Every structure is written in structure tokens, then in C-alpha cells.
Length: 482
Ligand SMILES: [Zn+2]
Image (cartoon, rainbow, N blue to C red):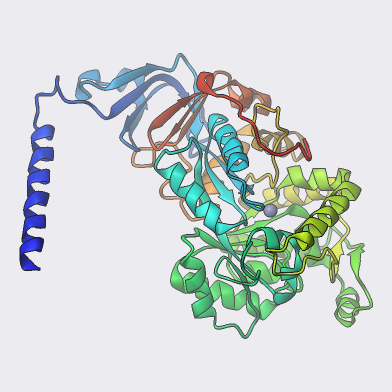
């Protein structure tokens, strides 16, 4: 046994010596791991200024320096690869904070979506629940460059026991019983939370997603234990019965869906009737209620990011009937599947606030004015023939409908996304020491979100993906929403 160990150590030593020799080779023969992007207009997501005529020095996976061209000493970086960025505009790599690539796992579909995201300038994507077996594999494949894809961060889901009749939980946990799987756990206020959170972490997930049918006590216990074990919680803003204030008080990293915020405005009478079962479905609320503003204040206290998903709020408002039909169809298919052990149902219990798309826009505007960090999640995708990711729509809605200036929209799509993940020290800005995630555009995105379509190069972890090499693949599934 000892001998084996010794042999192993010696070969390790030889390997180390070999790499040391490489490092001391003459500079003109060494293969440099440095790339300098020259003549760049930089939007760094720190300052509010566009910095013209800059150089970005990337070494390996890291930004080594960001400086004016006039201060660049070329000979400090012998054998660096030089990329003349011809006055392109650089932003930190874009972050999609709400995607779903494995609800019904299909590798071809996932790769199609992720490829389009990466070549659209997206370097990190948060998947907000699906089959974690597939997501872990995709995440690893993205990391080791087996597939062109953003870094994929995904969740282990927790919800109240009643939730697990939703057809999507059957498809995301095929072969198992939804609610009794490490990535889809049914929990309540009495659950052994230490074990439940540890099981979530065991799926290699970046966060716990709290989804629905959780009460205030359960929500608080999840938040407390997750913090103790060092894993973020990404929540829906309304996980009924727990409403936005209870979710914010659980100190989660992010709260999704603009219209979920409206649940803060239920009256005591509505809540009592909902409790007794007298009231069900959509109920009118006072969307100007100060109770909603109080939630925004609470979010600010904990740096909680608001992930409003305006694109899907718009889609839902325009496609209520279609959505219902889709869910019913999915439930029927799932129940026919002999491998599905759970029973799918689309019956909804409890109350939701009436909230249209314009209401959602208004809620986001108020949150923005209150100083809440907004992120950019879509909860959807563009059609099979669309060459650009859904994220561009979200940025357009934030700019054109909500009225957020493009400089702040870009911060939403970068540094705020990083905060939502808990990676604000690693990604989200362009500065020395951060991961080299950079999106380049030929036209100035500050002049309008349509300029995102001039994307020309994505750099993820230092690796370049030129837009000219982009091939729109086959999604492998029929177009649903377009
Ligand atoms: Zn979602």
C-alpha cells in the first residue's frame, strides 16, 4: 500500500517538474494563454459611463486587466493573441435568470436552446426547475465545453405535498415518485429540514427553488436551513399560502414573476375566505396597495433580486386559453404513461391575484423606482426558427414598457443576475479578476435593445464563440409558443 502511494507521489512530482519546465521556456516559444481585445467600447456594469477605446486583457478564464488603449504595453504580454474589436461594444456576459431546458428532458431540445443562448451573448443561465439528472449532465457538459452553452445553474425544487400532482413534476421525475426525490421534495413546516436541504445539495444544484403550497413557517425554515448550509434559495414571489412578504422575510436570493407580487395585496377577508375554501381562483386586488411597496422595502434590506419575467407575463395575458389547453393535454399524456407513478392533475386550489400585463409592468416600475435589483429572466423561449434568444425580448420590455434606461437594463442582465445566483464576486461586471465572460456587439446596445441583435462575439470563461459560426439547430420538438 505504501509503495503504491510512493510511486504515485513520484509520478506527480515528475508531472510537476514537467510543467515547471514549460513555464520557464523562452517567451517566444511558449504558447500564451492570453488574448487582448483591442479598441473596445466598454460597458462594465459598474460605472454609468461608456468607456471608449479600451483594451481587455484575458488570461485563461480570467480578466487580467481592463485599460485605455493608450496605456496598453503590448510587450508586457508576449505572444498574446490580439483581437481587433473594431470599436465593438462590450458588456459583461448576459445572464438569463429564468429558463427551463429539462422540464420534459430532451437532450436535443436543451442543446438547441443553450446553443442559441450562448451565441446570443448569454454566458450564464439559471434553470428554474426540471429533471436534475439531465440538468447536472448538461451543466457539466457546458463547463467542460462538450457542448456550446452558457454556464448552467439549476435548482432542486421544494414545494408543499399538494403541489406534486402537477403534470410537470411527473415528467421531471420519471421513474420516481414526485415529491419523494432529492430534486423534487414535498416539504412542510414539520419536515426534517437539515436532511431535506442536504439532499438538495446532493444533486449538485446551485440553489433550492421554492415553488408552491408552502406556508410561512415552512418558508422560513427552508430559508434558515439553506443559509446555514450555504445554498441560495430562488423562489416564486407567491408560494401560496405563503405570500411575498413571508418569502422576502425568508431572505431568499431571488423572487420570480411580477404578478406574484400582487398577492401581497389580498385583504384579510379574501384570505379568510380562501382559507375556508369559499374563495378560489383569480380575485381582484388593489394593485396600488402599500403592502406591495413594503415587500419591495423588505427585499432591498436583504439584497433580494426581483426576477419579473415580463415576457411570460405578457404571453400568459395573451394566451390564457391556450395555456389551459396545453396543461390539460400534458396531464392527459402523463397519465397515459405507464412509467409515471404520480397522478397528474391541473386542478388549481387557492387564490391568485387578478393581474394583467400592464399591471405587471407597473409593479416592475415601482420596484425599480424603490431601488430593488431587477434581473432578466424569460421563463420561455423564442420559436424554432428564431435566431435570437428570448432574453432580448425581456430587455426590450424592461426598456420600452417599464421605461428603464438601457444602462440599467444591461446592469439588470449582468450584475443583478450575478447577485441572484450569489456569484456577484465572480461574474456580472467587466473588471480585473472576474471570470472572462464578455458579450460583444457591433452596435451600441445603450441606444436600444434592438442593437443586441448585432451580437458578434461571446466570450465565456475566456473561450471565444463568434456569431459567424452560429448554426441554428433543429429543436426536435414542434413550435409551441413562438
Ligand atoms: Zn419558471
